[in-house]
Length: 388
Ligand code: ARG
Image (cartoon, rainbow, N blue to C red; front, side, top):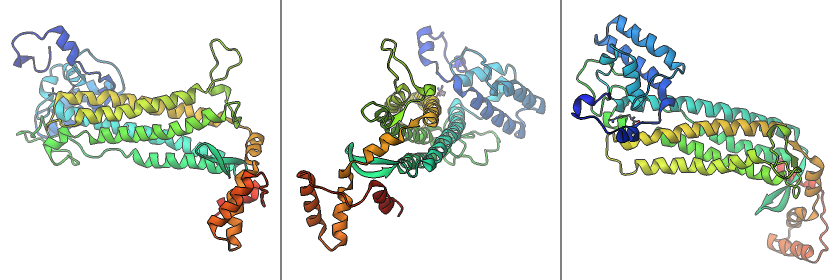
């Protein structure tokens, strides 16, 4: 029996029931929390007795901690049914429309906090490792061609800088849609939440908070994929800048000698999925008339998927990066390539008063004919540029 079965005369076809079913079990604890909040206001309005409020709290409290309840069209229906007799009163002054918007917001608040915690751990680790590698020379790249010497510390701090911006981006949503009812409030004297979203139509229709979260997750994944791609390169025999740790490397099912960077590759692959979740929900919401439409049920799987992948990728990458072994000799040998000092040599001529383009041409010619002699070492070059 659905919540709305009194409205329809014949039974729904099981195929339709199945099609309408929401994949929203993850929302359960948040929906319980929103329901308890609503029940508290129903008590203030005199619609629930003190005993009935207690009944709601006792029945939903343990569920809020994760137990599964029952099979229904969605978690909202499951909760109402689970509440038994008091469940027949709980839906006064609310709709699944404000309820689902409220529950999903609470979910995203937790997901943002979780993402920030994971990002915080990874960036702290990167800064810690960077501190140890302040004097480790390596080539810096543009176009994936050796460009100028940098330090590994500088490179690791660039990774951390991307993550620091991500940390800011996972801003938890504020405001409660409760009190907005199906779309236009209620006649009942139920006190609104203090942080009620002012416009009831907007409150049930708005999913910007889910899109903001998916954007933050997509961009985090884009950053993680850049880190992952560099790791994949660095652990190749060709680069040889680092060795994969046993804690985060995989073997081949056939080739006994292989040690593969599957963690970094899967992070890189999941970046595509993360972008897809954002574009998918944007497409769902585009041109959707206000206020609520069932299309919005599609907002949950991408948000749930993003939360799982953000936690998984940050966790696995943190382990890989904590245990990764850098080959300082290989890094230094690559940084000792004299042509990396060509720019410094041109700048040394500029310091003597030669126009930059003339200096550039003079050095370029010496590089071309093989007569280029750097006037400094990679370490001196780094000290002159990066200590500023
Ligand atoms: N399961 C629905 C969702 O996720 C809940 C809201 C249903 N509201 C409705 N008017 N049919 O969006």
